[in-house]
Image (tube, rainbow, N blue to C red; front, top):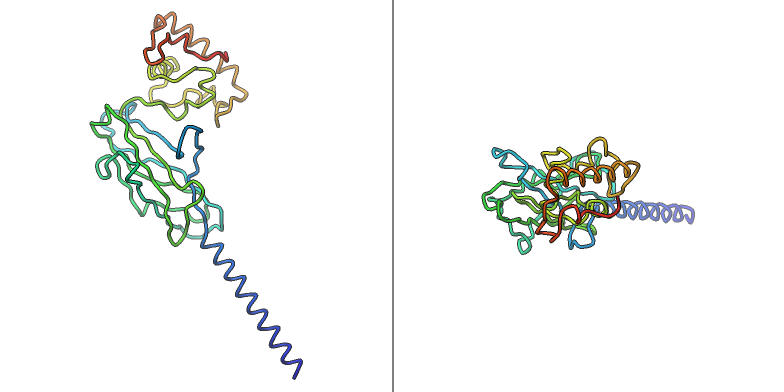
Length: 253
């Protein structure tokens, strides 16, 4: 009898332990923390991305824009949706007029730990003279909870704005940013779509904000840019920087 009682107690303990493990697993699964997977600059309150229509043809009036997100947790064999809201108090663009967000597009694909917040940016006439902000926030739903960086900011315009790729290393070599300098740099490097000239051959090594094996080529290109400014453009004055473009270039070359 004592032996039977002992067996019953052991079985009860095993069932309790199994239940605890299951509850623990459920708790872990229910708390996948989703966050915006962007590097935040020291001057930024929130991680942000920017887009300008200025390099696109006039018939291009919309752009599907992506903000990467990521979570730490168990992968799933099914697509899982996540919830995103617009922070109205920080958003200056008009929903429906300047942008749209489609709820069923916000998904983490099956077997993946990464996905995107997808929004549709719309080209409007007012963007010719101003830049507008859209601020998003990851919210709780049945699949994910907000992680450490749940908020993202998108700047949209139809005029030239400082591109995302003009980071600290560009400043070190090209100097402080200005619209005039950027346009001249793109013209010299024969880039017509606003892409970072150092993100294409032969400067592919200039990525992740770190100058790597092609730093010598980068410096050489800026020296050639300097000579081109002098011979082809007469070293124009840059009112934004209160200096000539050549004198405003970086000193690292």
